[in-house]
Every structure is written in C-alpha cells, then in structure tokens.
Image (tube, rainbow, N blue to C red; front, side):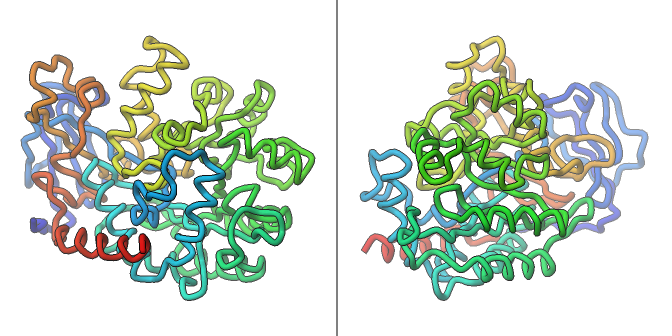
Length: 453
C-alpha cells in the first residue's frame, strides 16, 4: 500500500466521522503541515480552505493511541515454552538466558514487528524499554530509531540498563549486565545524538534502569542526576509483584516507594511500569509528586501479578497511561485490545459505572501522553500534532452494535482502517504504507526459531 504524497502545506479535512471521542470535533478535524488547525462541530463545515477531504462517515475517529510501556525485543519470544505458566521472577529467570543471545538482526526485526503491530492497532506513539546489551548489541537503541523512522511511528525510547547480575544478588545473568560507567556514557551519547525536546518530536530518549532487583542504588541515583542535567524523563518497573517488595526489603531495608524516594526518583519526571502493590500512604506520596503510572493489564493478568489501583492513583495526582508491556508477557502488541483489557480488569476493582469506555480511551491517549511528559500529542485539539486513528465497524463482531464509540472497546476492535502520524497516512485500508509485511513476518519467524533452538 503506497502512501499518496502531498505538499506539507496541503489542508486536509477528516470529514464527518461516524463517531468521535470528543463531541468538539464531531464534524471532523482540519490538518495542515502536520498540525491540527481547526475542529469542526457536528453538521458544520470548516472555515479553512480545504484542498483534500477524507470521508470518515463510516469510521470512528480517535486521537492516536499512545503505548506507555513495551519491550519490543520480546516479540521474538511469544508463548515461549520455557516461560509458560510462571509468575514474574521465575518467568524472568527462564527467559534471561534466551534473551542474552539477542543480536542486532533480532533487534531490528523484533522492533519493526512490534511497531507494525501497534501501528495497525491505531497506535501512533510508542515507548520502549530496552535494557539488554550483551556483547555485540551495544547499539540496540540506534537500531530501534532506524526502524521507527522507516515505519513513521513516533517513539520514546528508553536507554534501559542492568548492572546487578547474579554475582551481586540480582536476577539477570552476568552476560547481560554492564558496568555503570558504560551505561551512563551510552545514555549521554544517546541523549545528545537523538533526543529532540521540541514540540512534535518524533524521537525522545529517556533513562530507564530496569528495576530495583537488576540495578544498583548508585546507578539509580546517577541516572536521576543525568536525567535532570539533560531534562529527560526517567522510567523503571516498580511494585509489580509482592516478590519485588520482599526483595527491596531484603536488599535495601525499604519498600519500593521508600527506595524510589531515597534515590531521588519521586518526581514528575518519572513514570513507572505496573505500579500494583502500593499501600494508601504510598499512593498519596506518588500522586503528590506527580509520578506517572503505565498500567499494563494483559501482562499483569498473564503473570498473575495483581491489579493496579488506577483510580486511587489518578485521584491522588498520578497520570495514568496504558502499556501493552512486552510481547512475552502479553504475547501481543495490540493497543486497542489493551484498552479493552484495561476496561475489563479495572471494572473488577472499581465497578462498571466508574470505568467507562471513555475513561480507558482517555488513559490510552491523554494519560499516556502525560506519562511521557508530552503536551503536544494525546488529544485532537487546535495546535496539537495530527496523530489520529480511524476504525471501521464492518467486521462481524460489530454486527448489531449500537453506540459506535463504545462498540470499539466493548465489541473488541482489533485493527484500525486508517492511521495518521504527523499529518501523514501510515495505514490505509488496514495496510501499512510502503511496507512488505509478509517478508518482515517471515524473517521474524526465522529469527525466533534461532532463539528457540
């Protein structure tokens, strides 16, 4: 599927959608030079002069979905035989030696597969947490940036790290950990080379020590200092399981949130993956500091980790986003399906009246953007980036559906019909523009077999 190219100064009207997340643009949005310049009310026409219009009368219009936590490389180890039916720590121990065999071609393939899968599901911005740098894989983040540019997806790539191997009481094998100086030097290199702080940035870099059980206290502190120096975000896994709480008490004599505060991480520069096992006092402290939380429902369910207290954290002041998490603990990278999982899982905790389809869509858009420290994406508004997704309701699961917006979530939408990033169509008629996806899938299968054997 080729992308019809037009001048960046072409004015496009996404016209009269079947339904929209916000009634303010029930008549559509007008886009010029990759920016939204006008919202059109229901039944109205734009004030702007229009060059091209797209009839969206059979499509539901959403802001582009934003994935706030992922591990792209794990698309190579979906449903891996050695990791089945295990909870987090034993699951990690079974997979670390396999992931230690990753090489550059595997990172290239797994990144493109993950980004393509997310793009097809309506995701326009993706954050990835890559923390494996065995010998030969020192430029993993560089490879990811190349693939993101090829697919035209906006990315927040985190320079992950592990410095606490088995020899120091951590979980990872020694072959996967690096020295702290190596980690910090490469973090600085990546920030200086790739981080774009301007509005509309397609690439941003964050620093992301993997977890309290895989990095040292010194590295956590040094990462916080470096992030402040360069004004970049900080990310890590925290409070995912009770095992982690026990580990922190044993290793540091503190619960995870106390440890986070002790290393200078309790700030609005930080967003955390999972955030399940907090007590009431910790929820208030996190909210007061403005720490973001990436809720990963499928992963939390598959690994039997627990339920994130989303509404409590949000009421305290924490931005809440949604992440698919790694494709070895989710076994998929589909953002619109993850939104549905969030609705189902959180209704078990908070009830149907409080967890609505609008609420979970808001988490997957504005909430995830806030976690990433972005105010230029996550909603369709004048001056914001033209990142959007259009979904048709012509598949069998929608037959008989009433409310089109609710049907996307309740009936289980899986694939977007069109996706636009920065004003450019990247998906048309359910196909990614300018991409041989069959060849890409075949290559991924070959590489996954290598890891299996």
